[in-house]
Length: 327
Image: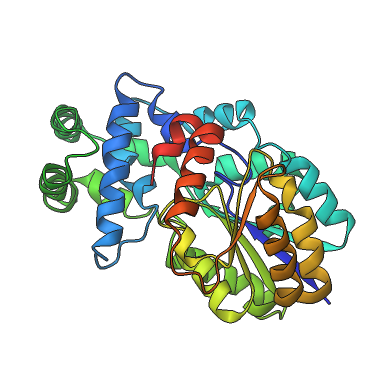
């Protein structure tokens, strides 16, 4: 039997949010990103046409360009990025036991390539967001610069909890003001791999290796992953939420809240032997045993997951620090 597993990168394999770190390279960039990240959640939940969770990475492009952030900055951040506890150990175990390991991530290609190589995941098994930032920066003219500068001032008057004002002001900037500029046209090129685009990437890998989604394991944690987790779970595969948030957990087959992702080893060994039946048995045994090696929960068929969400929220904040509060 072919054994295939696909990871989201940010969260399961690396605790930092790369776009957040990029934005923090200039003054107040972190605050601006938090507001735009909440806007991303609002657009996703409203199911805006032609919008996917994770399109934040396109929305922040004007601000990165205005502050002269470069592709070299992305690579430099990737070089300094930490890995989730146990990530290297788990990938090593998987490859040693004959698994094919994939990574489908919303983050920019420059970052994904660097991190996946550190983990030993083959580049041809990685799907990420193409991002020609240095070329896009050439599109910013003086008038665009002033528009983006004013947008920053407006955003900094908002808080990430002010949903009504966030929606009103950012709708105006992103869908009315910006499209009339050259920069607005240029950033349409950036198509972040989130939501349905993650599912499309997974289906491409599945077709390449002629393995239906029922044979796959997918690991994710956030709003960009919920459609991928849902697709794998509904097909009969194993969808795992690792330190997941309220947007991902309802769509997972099972979950693990832990500071060490290698605690999944025994569960994956069970999947290898007996797919869902054997995996459910092991997870439920671990669920009764408490949190010595993380907090396991079998979610398939479970109606009330409020307690699970609370456990994951605490662990997510612990492991991912500032990035843990993002959608």
